[in-house]
Image (tube, rainbow, N blue to C red):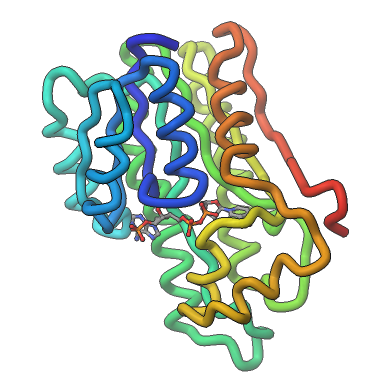
Length: 241
Ligand code: NDP
């Protein structure tokens, strides 16, 4: 893995932060993106590899293009893109769900992921190597009450990943959709808009996945020989229904 350049969106907490630590421990150079740059800088201080931190809201298409086109020389030509930034909000049953929440999920989970992909993919194809790992969810294929728009954004991620692979077949670039089940991160706190009691209730009775579990899987799929492409990988807590 040494010397690979890895760009991770949503690296300020949860899966993204754990991925940064995983790749950092293996000598990769890291481009860490999120809105909370102070968190990224704090994380960078823990890592003994070259790290470029950048404040980026993935919903801002112009900002995404600017960041990718102006990466410092040592960080340009990204080898691995971990399209991880994302969120669930509200998850209310559809008749009373907030349209603002639905839009935020689409803008972040769908459009943000498309912007990063479109900005980075051409370089990978030109260099005939690279790996895009998209963070989907089991919610993309398993319906549940309140999962409406969130699940649909993750279904998009899954199918977008498959279709991307078709478009670039023969280029040497790999595409993987990871679909985790319940994992204990800040995800639930964001979903319940800061209500800690409700957030922690999500995990009651189930030993949830950890961010480190997911980072290990993301790292593993990208470490396989270049001719091996894991297309889709679903991982759930053993006890999750
Ligand atoms: P966290 O809330 O811990 O992390 C989410 C990350 O996304 C944060 O770093 C946040 O950074 C970033 N983010 C959110 N919105 C934006 C934005 N507009 N621009 C840039 N970055 C943004 O949750 P997880 O680590 O659990 O979630 C990571 C991914 O995994 C998400 O795509 C989520 O949908 C998916 N997932 C999570 C599951 C779970 O149970 N935890 C299960 C299945 C999938 P910041 O706020 O600093 O911008």
